[in-house]
Length: 325
Image: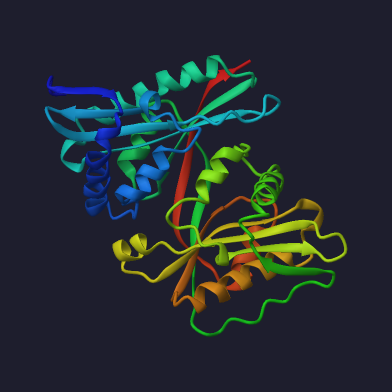
C-alpha cells in the first residue's frame, strides 16, 4: 500500500468526490449502483445517519479512491442487532490492500456501537453480488461467512396483466401523505417483524425517506379492512429517472410489498403487487423489478413467481458476530 494513501472521516464538502467515485466504479463494474449528488445528499442526511463518524474515505493525495460507511440502527434491545457496512474501492486502486484497511476502520467503529448496545448479539454485515469474486474474498478473509441470499427479480409489463383481484372484505386505495405516514411506518415495521434480519425502522428516517427525490405518493397503495378501516397491507413503488438514464431500462421499482401476518394467504399480497404493476405500466414503464429474500418463509417468492417475476441477479449477505453473550 502506497504511503501517501490516508483514511479519514467524511466531511460534507466530500460529497461531489464521493459521487464521482461511486459512478467511476460502477462504469467498470456495471452493478447499477451509480448515484447522483441529490440522491447521495439525501441518503447522508437521514436522521440516524452519522457520516462524520461512520463514513471513512481513502485519499491518494487529493483523489478519493475508496470509501466505506456504516448504518447502525438502534433496533430492539430484545432482538439481535445488525450493523450494516458498505463501500467501494476505485478499480485502479484495487488489490493493494485498501479494501481491507477500509473494512477494518468500519469494523472498529461498529465495535464501538456494539459495546454500547443492549442486544445480546450484534452482527457486522456486508453484501456482495454473486459475480463480485474480489469482494467475496475480502469478506471471507475477514472471517465473515455467507449467511443469506437475496435476489433481484424482474417482470416485463407488456400488456398481459390481469386485473387486480381484491379479496372480499378489503379494498385498495392510494396513500395520503397528510394522514397515512405514521400508519404506513407502523404497518411496515409490524409486517417485517418476522423476517430474517429484521431491524425496526425509525419514524424520523421514514419521514425523511418520503421527502426524497423519488417519492411518488400516487404510486403507493394501501390495503384496508372494509369493516374496521385498518390498514393491513402495503404496495409502495418508485420510479427513478436517474436510474433509468443510467441503465437504459424503462423499469419501475416495487420497493415494499407487505401484509400483516394475520391477513396473509388471503390474496392481498397478489392484489397489491398486481395493482402496483398496473400503476407502473400506466406511467410508461416497460418492466418492473424488486428485491427479495430468496429464503423468505412468508410465501412472498411464490407470489412473485406466480405473477410472472423471474430472478435476474443474486446477492449474498456476509456476517460475523461482533458481540455474542
